[in-house]
Length: 346
Image 1 (cartoon, rainbow, N blue to C red):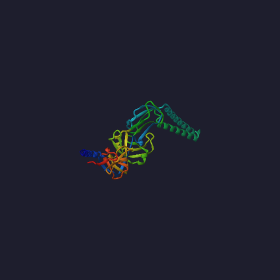
Image 2 (image 1 turned 90 degrees about the vertical axis):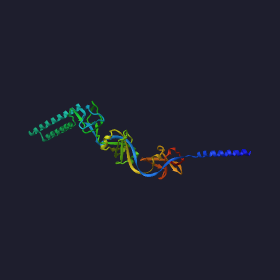
Image 3 (image 1 turned 135 degrees about the vertical axis):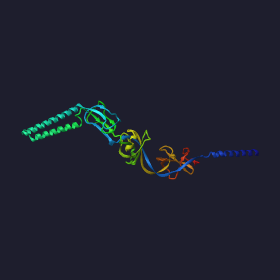
Image 4 (image 1 turned 180 degrees about the vertical axis):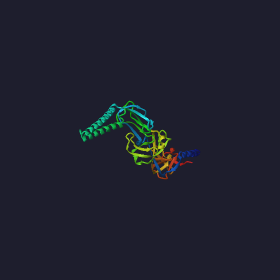
């Protein structure tokens, strides 16, 4: 009986010895991590905005047709580059306008002959000084009407309009064979040496923007080309087409040819510096608004929700339950969960 008891006791003791390592291995494992401390430093915020490259509004020339007529021929197309003096279009004066010019010319001849007649009668005392003065006035009025029509080109049966400056055709409102009225805007010519970036920003960001802020502009489809400039204008209303507020930045003359008119562009607007809590970018996990970091407290990883902000030079500003000097995990944090034990990585 005792022999069996001793044997059972020995087996139980052996089982306890064998189970001891398993019990130790069942304890919560620790993760090897690297940490960095939270710092407080000044960072320059950057506002990203998209827009389009446009001609400078101050350098766009509107070419209007001074008289009614028929567009007989057009030599240019939308987007075409033209040089000063090149042919743009040919207009044939409308018959009604031509008739108006002939009538005005006849009125001048009649008024001149009437004045001569009144002056001759005055010498023979068959007319009065008042009648002569009235005849002079009639001649001046008729001549003024004729001069105005001549300046508008109504006296010419046809005319070729030429480019007054070098530029790009940015708007073409006429077609060959089209009948047009007087003062119709035929086309717009924009100087290709004066371009601006029209960027759109959210209305709530207006308080951060001021003219003179530095802007880095690059093409959406050609990011290798970058232009450094400054904000020229910040508009005070929402653009009904984009539902954003327009911000204009002039393109330096020496960099105009690096970009194409009408290109879609990305603008990085540099805002004034401000002080933030910053951590290495690798410390922040998740996406806004669910971003978080792991703070190490007494050998444990504690998940702390944060709001990420400005990012520059591998650092990112954060706001949350953090203080300068707090250790946060920057490597190995993808393996962590809240409350896990951590140890320093070799």
